[in-house]
Length: 214
Image (cartoon, rainbow, N blue to C red; front, side):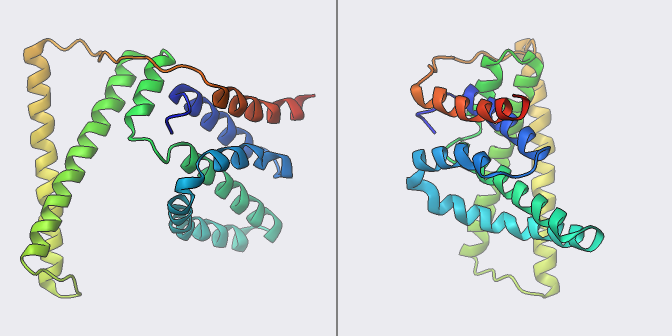
């Protein structure tokens, strides 16, 4: 989401998630969602698709709560969970993940935390690219997934290959750091500025806290 500052996104995501988690749902609480939806209307369809997929897991929580507790409590938690997930999906729909690293750096998080998050994202991206290559290779060889033993063996070999690959890359990365005298800090260019979108979003989120305490 280029029109927003990555630090503001991270702060608002944290504040909104905490607030919704510990308060009963009211109509006013959807204002930040409406605002970000207006800003991200072009990618709204893909975001809703992700939300529907995640609801498969959220519904499991709803069913468990429905069995153990009252219907009102279960539906309240279901709505709150969807609000938090939807809001965060809207905020970070255009993020590559490295925006979060830049936000952590701008917010003066410990340098080792910033470095750890950065290299974790880098490793995930590398392994994801490796998985895509393997899937393309299997597809080119005419592999079709079914319930046969051959399919299970293929998937077992696939995950085993990725696991070994991750260990090899991690060891290579460690050796590279030691040779370069890495001190636990990565240097990022922080050139993001606040816009009126940031001010409005932060105001809407903070307004929720003001309403509770005033």
